[in-house]
Image 1 (tube, one colour):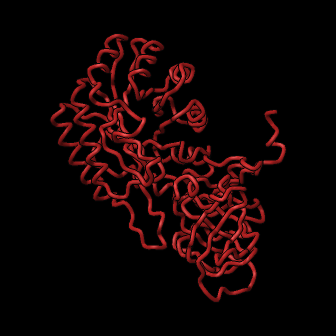
Image 2 (cartoon, one colour):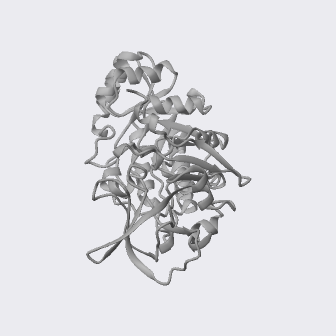
Image 3 (spheres, helix red, strand yellow):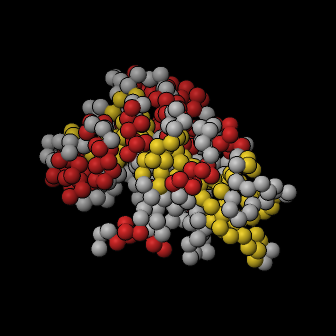
Length: 416
């Protein structure tokens, strides 16, 4: 194998001495690959974010719901959040206890809410309407309410979940109505939460959002926990020198805010965070094969099997993922080129990397899309009746473990 363009995976020893080309040959193309050491390292970084004693980290299964990765997160001492009965189901299968799971519901049916209640899962509601529904289903129960403090952040307007133009959370002006419904059904409001958005790289807006949430918390006397939300970003443009989120600085600022506020509130509540992609993104890469090269009107197109059925983030959010290149045969790249790396789906938006400068790429090369561990496989589909890829894990001792098989053609008709 030639090392054509793989600076990041070399520095992290991502493949643990395993040849990506041989992995493709054994498990098929495309292929999701995860690194256990990186996953565990990210878990530990966030577990150690604060010195504040009553602090927990919730793994977001929506970012990556592979059972093996969930089990690793649980082993590292993380709790979990869930957005659906399916996510609750896989978290329980991964060994999380009901009390470790927070169900953050959004416009759900009575049946979904009842599923969480029946499984002793703690429920957060995000509207007066849903609080009313919860009260009808679980009179006298404990509940959490998601508020929208009016502050949002994120890498794209579609993932900003706080602020005045999003569907999420309760407007703080409705706090009196929240109290009325709680009293009506004899509920105990023991937690509040928020989520300002996904992929913030500067911590100050997050701290400001936490401060706003704490102001809301002062309206309630008997809280047991406050979920500060998340959206912790990772540097998707490592090859351009993008800096990491400064966790040390963020932790220091949060510690001061939390210690000062709890002293005023009169007791040390439990504080939770939902780091989202931060845990899983960098532990995953997506390998695919270059099947065609073409030139159209002055642009070189590198045609791969990495359609947006496999990785949807670029077509949904114009997201950037760094690209690496591996080559089996002994041909050198003599120059750099501006290329579009595209997939095999019948849509013009099927572009993995647009107008990207890369070493000369040939048919048969293997493309690696970095930082694909979050919102990768979990958003994959069978669009164009294509098969979802296998997932493998590079274990801590550099062995290869199949953690989800590739789809078969029979899977396409399994439910007919």
